Figure 1 (cartoon, rainbow, N blue to C red):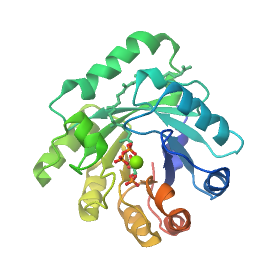
Figure 2 (spheres, rainbow, N blue to C red):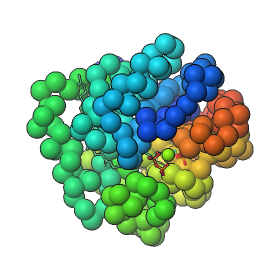
Figure 3 (tube, rainbow, N blue to C red):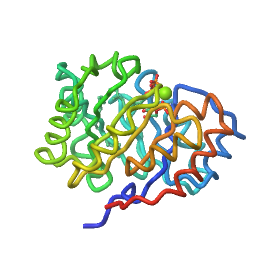
Figure 4 (cartoon, rainbow, N blue to C red):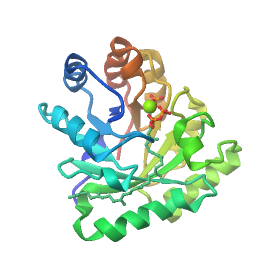
Length: 236
Ligand SMILES: CC(C)=CCC/C(C)=C/CC/C(C)=C/CC/C(C)=C/CC/C(C)=C/CC/C(C)=C/CC/C(C)=C/COP(=O)(O)OP(=O)(O)O
Ligand SMILES: O=P(O)(O)OC[C@@H](O)CO
Ligand SMILES: [Mg+2]
């Protein structure tokens, strides 16, 4: 089987359709040398703002994936689709419920080879996604490990996503999780707003995701690309 497009991605910018970016900023992001762009956000993502952002990104060659957070914002034409499942929520709606509901509608049309589930472990209680999904963010190391065994060894999810959106996470824990994984690719995201934080995250995870910094300090966000490129980690 051909490897998924994201399997070699070390650095990703995540762009939120619900936030605005000038053409100059988008130009710099798309030409930055990042491996890929994920379009996604936890709230305010609509069909219209997703189509608009995709059409602007498509002026460039950079690969672009959609992380689907709302069944009403499913847009054709992306290179890949990620379907988040929240592992650490007691509310099954966010683990399986909404996804199954969407599959009733889209199941027959899904490009399966270009579609992957992501097992999200949300570890910042203040993240929008944590509040929305009622995630149980206060996890012991044993709890984290158990979730990782579930995602990687039992469910065989292709991606495990350690999500600290809005804060820089526990990088030692990220490295420990990577060491446990046998099949899944580890995405880390949260609070990367300098080259140094990007470098540390890239030492620990297979793939690092830079989101809010794009909107808050673009110059520093752009520097994360080179920082990640300088760190060797075995992928695949
Ligand atoms: C041809 C064609 C049409 C192809 C496409 C077919 C296709 C692939 C269909 C998809 C069908 C499907 C199964 C859809 C799932 C829909 C769904 C409702 C999933 C639920 C996802 C979920 C658990 C959402 C909860 C929030 C979450 C975890 C979002 C992930 C992204 C995220 C955390 C972004 C960060 O958010 P942000 O807003 O930036 O947060 P901050 O405020 O902290 O910055
Ligand atoms: O926005 P930040 O904090 O960079 O987090 C990136 C990403 O993990 C969000 O889903
Ligand atoms: Mg954000």
